[in-house]
Length: 382
Ligand code: NDP
Ligand code: MG
Image (cartoon, rainbow, N blue to C red; front, top):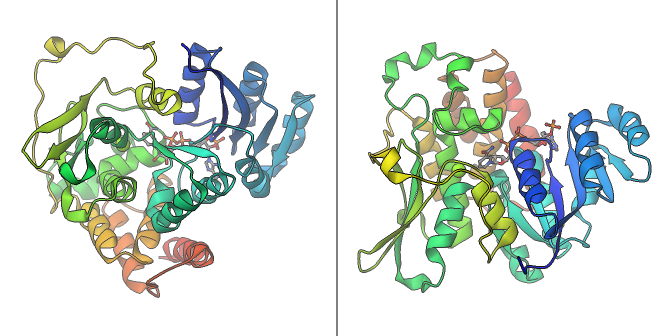
């Protein structure tokens, strides 16, 4: 492959996306060199990754684990805590920072890397949900590119390649429908954590797996698409596609529709974001459409999956609403995972937080951080 060597920073290396990204790096040792890695709590995994990939520096979020990481990695710079992560994210001697951190904790690292002039491969969709306007402004002023990692957005990015932006009629974002696609709404109150974690097609971290069960993930992805592709909300549609083979589509003004297909394996969009504009050879099994047999599509059920309506409302109103939507969702999901609230309370609590907060038309970074604190505490005490 004559791409040369790309220098990478992988933040959130210990998570589902991070581990998949390192497996892509492992497949192409001549094309990638890992400079920075971060983990939040999984010190042992971070140590093992650092021993294999020999980065210049690592950051461990949990400060109580700093000493253990430092002692295990002589010759490697070790940072810790939130400030350590934010400092790593600000370093400019990498070609791409892959943001594989989960949740609102990923927003500032995205901003720091862009400010440092570093291109960002973004799986942390929450960054764009919370600070899309701010990030767009910074991308333009710093001349930095954002490479989508989310499979739907990678699909749209690929479908738009070589096309004239004004020829686009609409984006069609596909979603599997999650584990409760056919579950009657009346049964939602009895949903257990184990059932919600049992996604039919994708293997992912716990937070996004719950988001995929409530369909909030699709809502967050609509907001993500709005910022990535500069289209009005009316031109961003959702279609349910239970097989997760068509990853999304773009329809043009002449009615022609382009789709991107592939197996539901995140290594595909991760690898593309890291090798763009090249496609590198696959290390996964071949897509066999005859074996799959049927690709089906249906309308999303907005009455059953009310998180979708909350996300559309947040996007249409804008201002501080998407910030509160995102943080309230994340906190409610953690409370559900901890067994503190039921499945149906997730949208209820988000709705309450959206209604009760002091609305801001144009929140700046300090406003967003303050809203994050307010929303977290609101959901914790609700
Ligand atoms: P995981 O939960 O598997 O991993 C999250 C990563 O973030 C881990 O490295 C974790 O560290 C780290 N982390 C957790 N909390 C913090 C914090 N407060 N500060 C800094 N780092 C933290 O998540 P996923 O890999 O599933 O998802 C990552 C992102 O990618 C999410 O935004 C998700 O929506 C998006 N995404 C994921 C997909 C998937 O297939 N998994 C598909 C599309 C998008 P540690 O584990 O050491 O505590
Ligand atoms: Mg996705």
